Structures are given as structure tokens and as C-alpha cells.
Length: 90
View: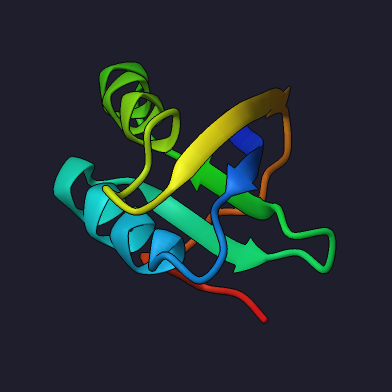
């Protein structure tokens, strides 16, 4: 199974980005995790089918209304870890 790793930059902390990311992941049946980074970015790991991932990516390129996404870096990983649900990682 492919795991998608995203680093989202811009005004993405303090705007409920993690909360809305979880809601969007649950909407599309995506498993994974989201967390704030000390750099001010948000990091996401996601696993799901191709259509769900495409829809999810559409969201993270925009984020919630109060966010200002400037850049999304995407990496496709071939790792075996299977996430259960979607949650916030500390």
C-alpha cells in the first residue's frame, strides 16, 4: 500500500488545519495522521485508494477558510505501516 507524505506550508497552524484535515480524511475513508511541525508547517501521512487521495489532496491544497496554503510538498512512500483511522500525532 502506498503512503502519501505531505508537508503543508503557509498559514496552517492556529487555523484548525489539523481538525479539518481529520474531517476530510474521514469523509474519504483515508487513514493516517496529521501534526504541527516546529517550523510552522503541518505534516500529513495518508493511506487510501487513488480517488480518495485525489479528493483529499484537493482539500490540503486549500485547507480551511482561515488558512493560507502557500506550498504542498508530496512524497509517495512504499511503507507497510497500516494506519488505523486518522488522528493527530504529537
